[in-house]
Length: 234
Image (tube, rainbow, N blue to C red; front, side):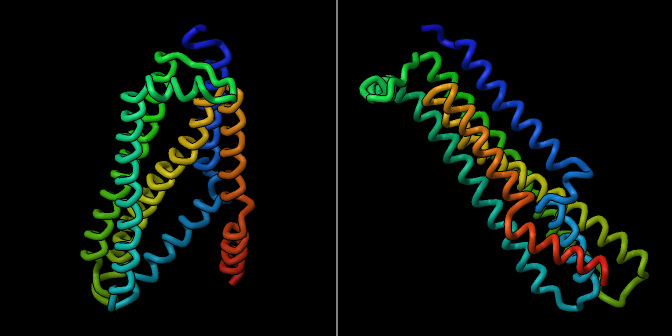
């Protein structure tokens, strides 16, 4: 059996292309604005604008702390998943023996197994860097929040510039967090490759449909889109 067959290369190419196209579609200035992530970017800006008008900002610090904690959780999860991937490499002989005994006809070689597991580990490394940078950006946002001019103090220009900078940092942190979560979704799709190239194509399509549904057809998207339309006419 060839370690890396043509069908494996095609399946992996479809997987990589799907990730690339989805990434650029969701983050495209036009399409991205209508996605759930894009709609939430507007309300991040609105949150900061409201925050600048408040004297007491305990609520805002609690919201930011919650965002930091969630990001830290996913960053830690990425590290555990990365370590688990290397455990799979060490247990390659046992896993291949189990696969050979299964009545599913799953055939692979040690080299191919190591290639697949290494690819999975790299996805989790990518996710960790995204979550870690997002966490760092939320830290910067917390500092900017603490340095925000008090309401009704300073000039309106100073408050506006500070709000714009804080909004940009928080929006960037949210974007990096979304990229990390996207990597988790595609990691689940990638697991299909351990079964067969056909399974990888199927799981990739399934993950793509699930993410598109979440971003453009979910109940949350409909609710927030309706709210945004109301705010624009108000």
